[in-house]
Image 1: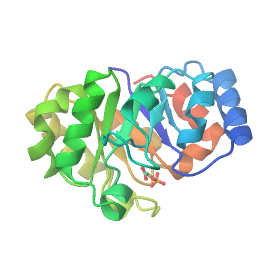
Image 2: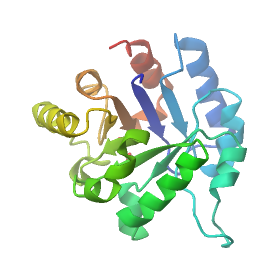
Image 3: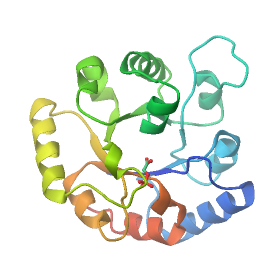
Length: 213
Ligand code: PGA
């Protein structure tokens, strides 16, 4: 599989700023095949007009619950990826690996690729049966939004050990990826999940245009 550059926009952006961002990326990147854009729900549909790979940042499995969004709805507006179990949701909404496994299984039946965020490798005990169908994004808590990314040698070891155990898996890294570390991290891993730095179109264009490893 190609390296994936996943832009996690969290609650950022407006229709206008997102359209300008995506037009700039489309016009200046050699290829957007590797790019996966995860805007807030209201902008998913508009974003799909500009780039092929769109990710929702969550969905819910309940049949009818006020204020939540179903997997069928995100599929309907063109999502082919979904971020599940981000550390922020694990903390604020008590999301568990058991629940994330159920959500990921649902995605797989709908042909939506789950991007499962893990903060440590204990999660793998629960989700191991679906690993080969997912993107696993390892995001150590200390690195998320802090400007303190993982040490590249540590990441290399973690990645190698994981691949030895799960040779068909796809392991991405996230947490304070920026212009100082992006090239090294991209060389080591299968992809990157990027928060703050992904808001900058020039940064993403640069990464996509160097994404030839
Ligand atoms: P960051 O966020 O790149 O701003 O650290 C990563 C994330 O929350 O997924």
